[in-house]
Length: 261
Image (cartoon, rainbow, N blue to C red; front, side):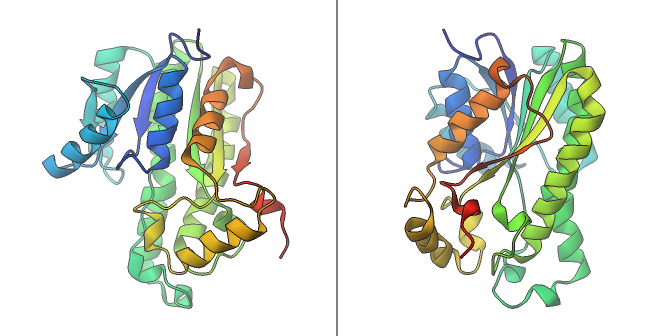
């Protein structure tokens, strides 16, 4: 018997089997949940996501294209989900974007307006847009859980993280405001501040290797975080065991955030 038996929801953000979203879906499925999935628009992206999802043991996954910067795409995705499943117990938001040109050490002050606003749109506003569409699906069945992925660069300066740190700060604040408004409908909203994990997205950050080495030597656990660490925390947050947890940012980074220098 799993913690999430009978629960169904949407996982947004699986790019490959190294992404946090993949590990979260793995943990949800292991605990009995049914997962629906999105992929970036385009046949190539669909094939890549489908291959990754099938490695989770899901032979015939429900997949829908989703462009985080398009309201029309979101309407179509959530509409198709509602038609297929009828309810949503959880929503996993694990998407972010910033032009890698502006994720290099020393050039944050040169970030152009378009790149700055674009990072906030895809990485943070998309959570608000998805929550708005998830609300009726969750409220009608008594509530649900919305979970988004953040990083310590939202709070402290991580050289090279730059505009993505600004976007993650906005994401965390947005999650708190959503938690306040949606709580009366039984909807909990939290973020996980995961440690550094080598993914397609993290490889774009200048100085990523330095972050990796620092975590291995300075974190209390003397290691980098594993995807399964975050997956397990996500499964707990989506379960009834976390029924009183909302508006929180949960660190899963082997304790890196507790170390001053």
